[in-house]
Length: 263
Image 1: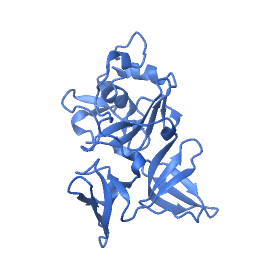
Image 2: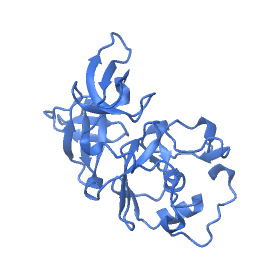
Image 3: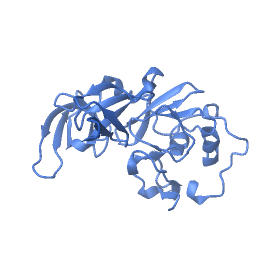
Image 4: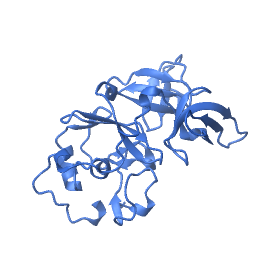
């Protein structure tokens, strides 16, 4: 299995310049499927905290970079929508949220908000013992009581430490939603209508916006949120815009290893 990814073939959600280099780092095994962005791209291409894979490895080995409450040492760890990234030494916390071009962006949040994350219910099944197992959009599974009124399409806010559900947003007409894929990725509005498609086709939805004409898409692209999850576009970070003082301290020998696969 190759360790590199051609830039021209990366998903549209990846915040990389496609024509700048031929290759970029390939995401490792983990959540978010093909849409997952390697953590090193967030550190280097989005935040500008490191200049190379070697610097990223060094920084991650310090144990001060957390994803969803857990320290991460793998620079290929996939990052995706609604993940929480914390830089404990810097006191910086971000939620991954799509911008209006559909690219991964980082929205600054308070430390308290970094203690939980949002997940969309994409699967539900009974398990031995009478409980119910829920599957979330990023591959996370939760076991809940069988009387819990959670349905596919609903969103849950999950405490990163206890894994308890601390909030529940129902997928229904009138809900606040955001599109995370498709031509309208990053747009936020109110779900006006759900149109059921007979057979195996995707249901379609209409979304209205306070500012704008609204849009239509398929329901798989929508996630229910609340006002706390709507970031300020002016504060969101989508591309490198940092000075040298903002970089994570790395080893003196910061040159990249001679690997075309990890440019």
